[in-house]
Image (cartoon, rainbow, N blue to C red; front, side):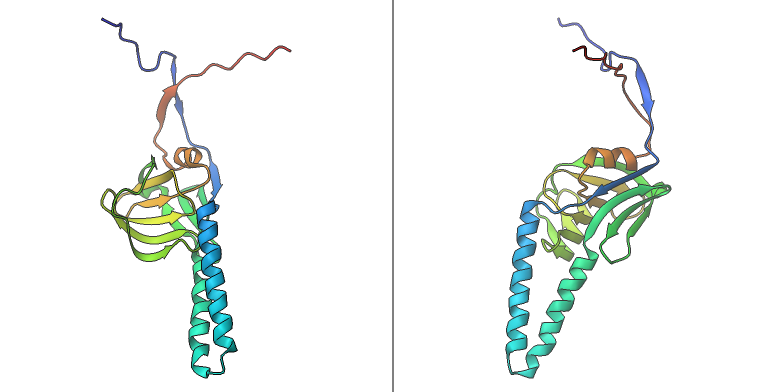
Length: 193
């Protein structure tokens, strides 16, 4: 029978979060392409509507311009953990602020699951953000600018958040304030040349 080994053979130490953390939410290639295509289509439609001699096309053209501007203003640009709050900063819209005391945990999330439905918000124009629902997660607020791993932020008495910062591991360490025990790694000896 194989001998049982302890999970952490090295001495354990407590690790505490840093005082301030900031990670950008940059668009991945797929979101940049979809944003560019939608902007080109809207720009073409607006130009065609203003070039038309029919005055009834001016109103819809301005609605398209306003929709594009509002989507850009509301799009997420950074995740900040500072003091007693977690903030999702947006381009020109006020930041979404969540008190750290309201956060139960932060954990990595590989997928939104099956049956993702956008209930209210934007999907693919300057990212995806707003209210979503999936079979696996239930109701949640999404602030995503890329595909792949995300941060799932469970909150007490409120809808969870799913965010895709550039630094997922750093965001989890900064948001989840519970002390964690990790294996101690001694300093590496200097490399002799």
